[in-house]
Each structure stands twice: as structure tokens, then as C-alpha cells.
Image 1 (cartoon, rainbow, N blue to C red):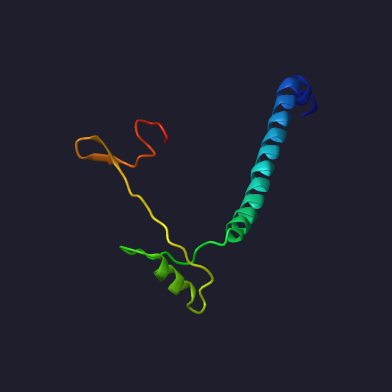
Image 2 (cartoon, rainbow, N blue to C red; image 1 turned 135 degrees about the vertical axis):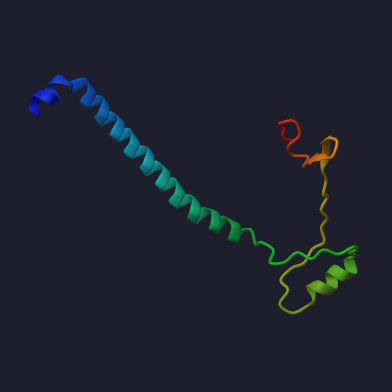
Length: 104
């Protein structure tokens, strides 16, 4: 066995380096996964996320003020969404964020 190691010294060094790099890579990925799973949840909860979205046809300031006065409502605000799609070919639609491989 000793002669095999001496005869293939370069191969053994290359194999040892490859194993070391692999262990380092796996350790880095596991460390990043651990940090990200903890921090993403903490960051999201720190943004005070909405617990409900209500879709209404019309909302005025008096309605928002009345909702804020309800018990167990911490905050309320009116907002709007725009839903869009782009027809790239006849009867083929894509969201506007991905049209011809470009992001907008």
C-alpha cells in the first residue's frame, strides 16, 4: 500500500485537495442555509406583514377610517393592484416581467 501511495503521489494530492474543497463547499452551503432560514423569517416578521387582504371595488377614506376604528385592527390602508399581461403571439400571453427574455 505504501508503494501505491508513493507511485501515485500526484493523484493522491489531487484527490485530497478535491475532498477538502468538497467538504468546504458543503459546509458553506449548510452554513448559508442555516443563516438564511433564520434571517428570512425574522426579516419578514419585522416588516409587520399584512394578515389579510380584502379586494373591494371602491374604497374611500371614510371606509378606511371606519376599519381602523374596529377592535383588534392594528392598521388599515387602501391600495391598488394592476394586473397586466402581454400578448406575445396570437393567444399566447406572458406577464410583463418576462417578455422576450428581458425583465422590466
